Length: 421
DNA sequence: TCTGGGGTCCTAGGACCC
DNA sequence: TCTGGGGTCCTAGGACCC
Picture: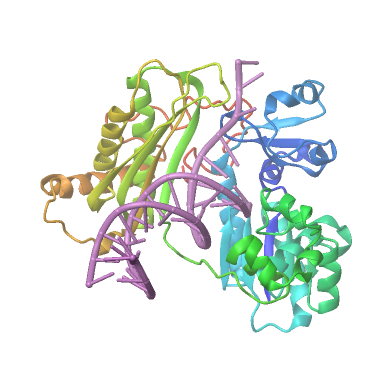
């Protein structure tokens, strides 16, 4: 059996943990750049605020004081997430952190009768120690765990924990679950299924496997099996990331190449630091730049370019330099750039690098790696990005990003590091 | 005026191999 | 007159997740 532990309205709950006056109020948290709604309290859902709404459409609600708005504060959410996960891990060490606010706990070896009381204890402890409310769904597969979690969240009678442990409960739960709410059935597939008469998860599992395979491929078959209690979704524990992306939208359109270079270099530097933190090196560096796609009246341009790195690299100087060369090739005058990003991919463990016969950077690589190691150390101890290469921007990385309703960093500094001073 | 950011996996089709 | 069969690898695009 699996337990899916999922924080309720996570970002809103993080804000409330330090601002209890937000309790019971309609609150939303916005995406980066104060763009659109990415988290809603129960009260704001009840007000009819859809997920993803651009904030300017909610101006009347905000101005009349019925809706409270917060900018996203990822340093805070990351820190609270770590604290919640630590409590879960202490209770059930065999755990897979699935996202910032979710984890699958492997309950193998426990008696079924002890599962619900144990999970209720976890819910209470997380609430008491962190202030974050969570719900837990228990079932034989991850997809059914998701279903159970929905019920635990929706109906207070479950007191935070819902278990699906026999065919009867499963059939009832599936009949009450709209097909679009099933984990793995997205906004593209749901309408297609509905058009064929599949409206609930129960309708879906009633179809033959061959029908599912024809219409949804092997991904759909996995979901179909999982809903019947047959595990088909693999664990993804402790895997190194295959790609790392750092991208941002800008508060204002950028029209100067020098200004965009500062941003792109910054993103490249962040990617390099993330790579080193994972102990990885990247065989490819790519960048993209984009004009504002919501302004059809302006000329549009959204190119992308990749560079092979042989041998793979993780030093800040090498990745920043690759990114700036790529930008030189992509830059065109006469456009206003709204967004840009750097992607490092084809990653391998840093301790397993193959040398290259044609390694142009060999002479300076050792130096670049030593410089990067010192940057990591100083930046960690100083608690802000004190050391950077000259093309990166001064100031912290959130500069130039709109954050008009941001809460303070209650538990960390701006880089998410614990405050030790 | 104002619309996020970061990932994964699968599939189809083309190029290439023998 | 006539053009097989069986693979692999790579890429772009789509779909999904949070």
